[in-house]
Length: 122
Image (cartoon, rainbow, N blue to C red; front, side, top):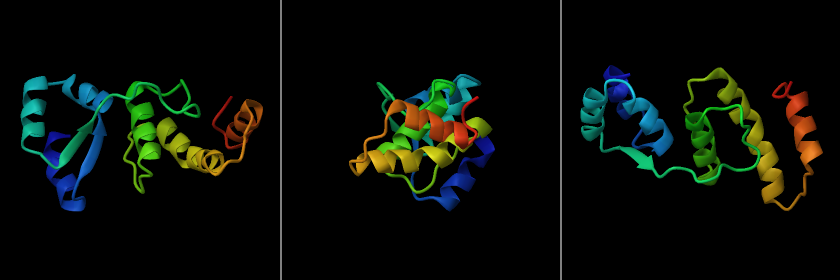
């Protein structure tokens, strides 16, 4: 990962990272990784998400849930997630969020059914 930070910089002007992801990142080789972050001021860290939006499933680890919550909150056009399950959720949740944002009430059973039909629930 450390050797690929310049690639992210070459592709994007700014990259946003929730605090939860930063904590995971620093969990391995903290000194080297902290130094790498110091040389990447374009990598912006956002505070921890107090409570993720209601459609984010509990099955996701805190880092992935925080990435999706940050993306929803800021209407991000692109999200980078390494876990396959989280990528699948990220693809389906925005439509349900958009419907609710536009005043369409969706009951819990409707949301659960939509996620199940999309293959996101067992």
